[in-house]
Image 1 (tube, one colour):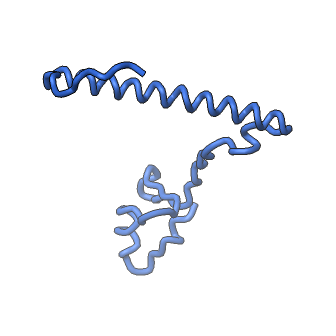
Image 2 (cartoon, rainbow, N blue to C red):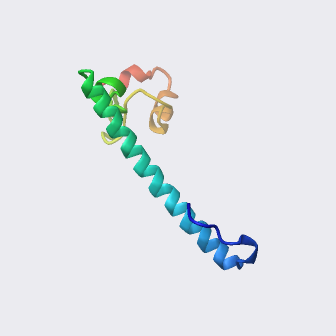
Length: 106
């Protein structure tokens, strides 16, 4: 291990530079360690007849787009999937008597 300088004798600017250097080195070493561990795990899985993805999975799955269920007849660009808060255009339109959200179904 490298010999540490006497930190009490370093200036403020030198300490900041040293900290920046250490932070960069930590990130680099962490990345290297992760890659080495990933390779070891892949080899271990392969030796037992599996792939690494079989053991840990492939990660997060992307969610698909949700189909539009409602459309404003006055302005076709106003749409809503039916999830989340009801949009303002639909709130205003459903305040009229006799108008329900089902009236806007596509």
